[in-house]
Image (cartoon, rainbow over all chains, first blue to last red; front, side, top):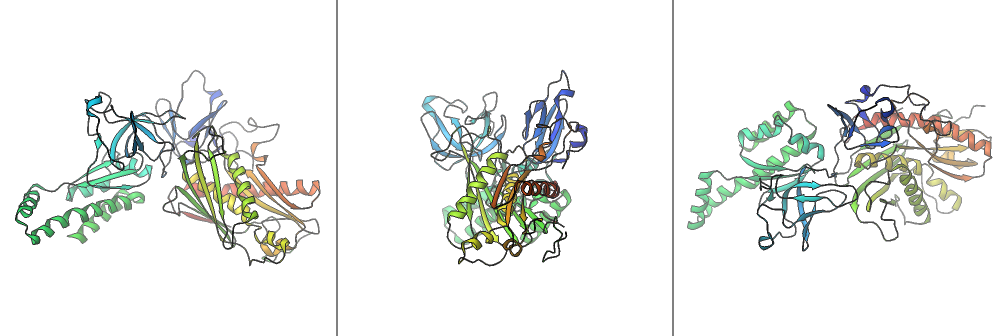
Length: 267
Length: 258
């Protein structure tokens, strides 16, 4: 019932904290600047926790609470996958799974001018970068990197998009490469885009010889070869997506074993 | 003056608790909480852009929908929705996520005993243990969804027997014999780096505060304070249980206590 006797801040690092816990006492740290990330708030002279999660610290002075949820909290310089919901005169309205809908200015593309505004249909999937994420305002996005180049941002065509939690997407983007992606990459070749907002897009690249075969079939209307070529792509996308979705709570070794079993069953 | 309870518990003993989070696939946060035979499932959707018509756009809006196990939605359900909404507004931070709506849906999975619509007095006693169970489930679901909160809430039901004895967490059968009862919601007990005693509000630690109190029946002021003391002691146990449940961040993790 009583709060525990004074505990040093170091005991909370890398431990799960619960909303209400006071993790830092600012009156004991003089002349220091502390940076607070997500999940922490300042309450007069103390820093208390807003969300349940693991308290992390990175030198020299950044504290944050790491947690995994199905919704996303926009923050600057994050790369996310957004879905176009509407287009206005100045902006595209893009849904990024956050509390407010995000704006993508029509000129925020490489070499974008009023004359060559891209036309995105409602429902198109875009790989974008968050430029502004101020509290109380709609976040702003951009399809260029900081220097103005396109750098893989923009429309994602074909492929399949599925949703996971934000913690899972951070794991997929971690370096060294996440075990499940490494194991899949050894046997299959595919293209993947991971958004920090929990959306993942997977697409299959057809190998060169198969592509030739596909065009031959198209021109000669041979139905037998057609079915052989097209079967490869959708089932592989399903395998990759299922492998990624199942890997959320598995350790590295378990992920590798799971992927091996999955791929063995297909061959 | 010992009181004999039908299931053999002491006056201050709670029924077995069980909580599991992230049970629903589509909901942004979900939790199922059961105390003995009473089980409630809470789902949280949001925050989503836009507020309802008469709500203040400078604050996040919380909408509560209570779904009973059977029957139509009536005044009692609306009352519980209002109590839950006020409680949630007390524990959530209202300065972030402005102009958004967060929906909390409470589904009663199982309540203690059968339903009787004949006697209006009995109608209250059917839902006795539901409100504290629902508040606990809603709090766990909000944590699962990542809604920013000042602290957690733990809810308990205290009853006053004819003999003047106070018992905690009654079952439906025990409820019918009670003179009066109170649902009490307290803030959870927190761990702090501040030295003990420095974060007192008006000379008492924050956990001694009370968020919500709903009473039925007549009891004297002394009896009410007695209920509050017992409730606070039990809320520490509930608080510990909730903290242990949150320690494991794997979803669909269920922990059982007592």
